[in-house]
Amino acid sequence: MSFFLDHPNRTIATIRLEVYIPNERSRFKYSTGRSVKTVYWDKKTRRLKTMRGAQGDRNRKLNIILNEYEFAVERIRDLYGSALTKDRLKSKLDEYFHVDDKKPETVQELFDEYIDEIVNLGTLTKATIEKYKRTGRKWSEFQGKRKIMLHEINYPVLINYVTFLRDRYKLTDNTLHRNINFFKTFLIWNQRNGRKVSDDYKKIKINQRETDNIALTQEEIKILETIKLDHRLDLYRDMFLIGVYSGQRFSDYSVFEKADVSTNSYIPLHPKLKRLLDKYDWQLRTISSQKFNKAIQQICKKAGFDDEVKKTKYRGSKKMIERFQRWEIVTSHTARRTFITLSSTKGMPDHIIMSITGIRDPKTLQKYKKINLETVMSQAQKVFL
Image (cartoon, rainbow, N blue to C red; front, side, top):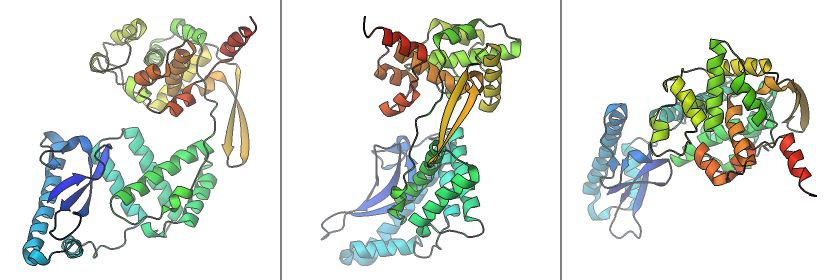
């Protein structure tokens, strides 16, 4: 017998065992229900890699579990000999690992298990893990005292959940789309681990809407570069500009290290970027995005970015229009969007922008591009020259 990953080309895969049984047309396959990050899998030994530290401890524990599966298969083989069949092996493995004895698990229990797994795997950022935790808390609030089982999730339940999120949290369509996708990922994880999940979740479609998020212009960047600020705001301005010059996410550029741009990296070390990083000896403070956003908005207000901006949001069929002064909607993410917009405007090919920013899907890139009014007017003037 041997162990294999069900999807070896994915970031995370489930381990299954395969056994050759004489007189059977195909190999017997049995899911262990254990998911792993594929980079930790040794294809030669068919086990988790030997490593140091906390990940090494997790790998050793999982290898012990796999050894137990191997031991169980050998005992069952010895018991049945040539009379062994796929059905008998499955039945005995289910019995050995108490598959039939397990009580039906609630969605909340499984969600807690899912959170534990993604934390242990270490494949997601803390911010993303926190979003999954919030999804779990919202589900808990939705079900109330009733403990909904996994097999009970069907189309009506999911529609009620969508309605609850809309009504309770006043979510716009784009935010609701993200929340539901987090929950769908959890359901897919259960399917991958051999649990029965209704495919009704595939019928739930929340339309994404075009966003009105802004990008700063070249002139506004020059204003930010030269505006006189006190020591506290100077740091926030510099960190925002580091995001503009690098095109990275706030969670990445706020913890820049020299290794990030010196080895196997597509981040261009522009002279302006290097000057700012050297200014802080490449040791930037860790700042929460909420605190950062308040500071950069204060800076943009001081810089005079006060023209009116209209933002359109949708909640189902309801269209809502809100008006802001420009500085009010500048956030840490505006820096990344500004890099993409300015780079595209100046003719940088999409594949280069994607390499620098780490964006893999061209559709995602298009959502970031924000062509400003000045660019539109400039290009329009050239049409009839």
